[in-house]
Image 1 (cartoon, one colour):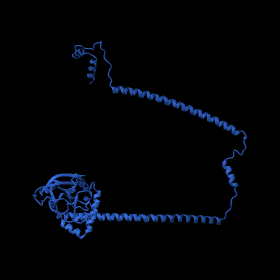
Image 2: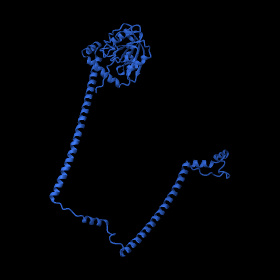
Image 3: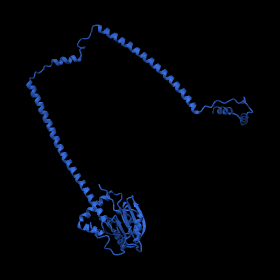
Image 4: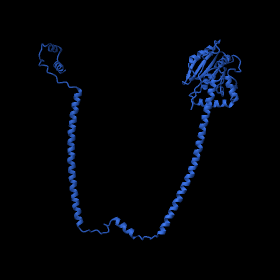
Length: 386
């Protein structure tokens, strides 16, 4: 590498012709008119050299400054020492001379305080009087501490009672909430496993069971990101107000309060005047009567085909069947959709809201190919056990 660099250095600053002559060997030496240029040092080397020179200068300057400081400190110390000696000599001379000031001024404060203390007449107390004073102090102290402790106990007792009441009320609330949650879970699981007729008999025997289920249902709705009934109400507001709606498994008939349309609300038991109690497989409506049939989280039980056949009977031609269910209930949305299409419906649209609910819209067709397809199934909704 060194030889090649020297060769190129010899060619630097020459014309093409002279370069060729030197390379071919016709010219042995570089012409005297063109001297060699100065050696090209890289930028980094230049910077390093400049820094090195700067640092050397700085170090030498620091050393000089330090030497100056040391010399100054030595001089100051010598001056201070000479001043101290002069002061000591003066003090020694003054002490040898007689004191002109009176002796009272030179008396210290401590000696004055001792004289005053000794001049005060001391009371002589007997042992009995000292003992009685100590007893009185003890009794007064005991009374004070007893009063403090009694007041603290009364305050603490009051606080403890209030805290115990609050804790007991909180425990009762939590216990009742858990009981209601467990009861709601049990009712939901039984509704998924039984048919519509069996569910109707269960609620007829125990109406409180139906109320408890809907109390738990409202608690669940409050935790959801969206209430699906509100979504249906918004959809219906865009449609004509003359349309009639059948709300199957309505609960407390919330949809009827949100919409101007005529809403027929059906459920196993009537929680209010707006609801008609019946089995959803046998609804008291004539054929081809409504424009919309809604199943909002109400397709529960083993006889789903009966409910959808009843919807086909109620709906007018080209009427809408709306099914809203939890996404976790579907093993396959396409499989369920094809099963509903076999029952005489035409698929219209599918919307998934907040990755939580599935909204399926169908239109009523002309004929039913199969009234009870095998693949018309939904999984039971999983309830978390807490």
